[in-house]
Length: 56
Image 1 (tube, rainbow, N blue to C red):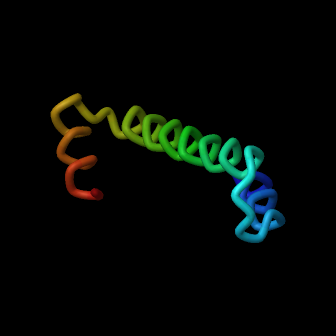
Image 2: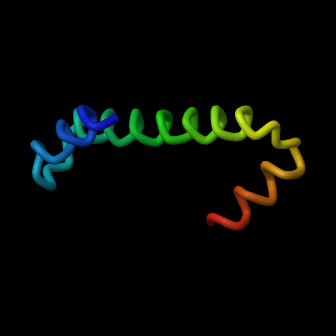
Image 3: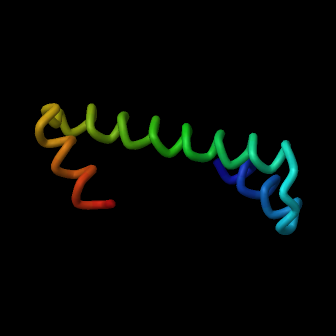
């Protein structure tokens, strides 16, 4: 995750295909981390929805 963010910083605000790809990868990684945490704490689907609504 840190390496991905460093790659994004190196692009310094340029709107390139590479930047878009990196931003998408960051979002996917964040989502996967969230899912792993939900699994770790054995959250139900309903509890996950509550958490997702709260953090929006």
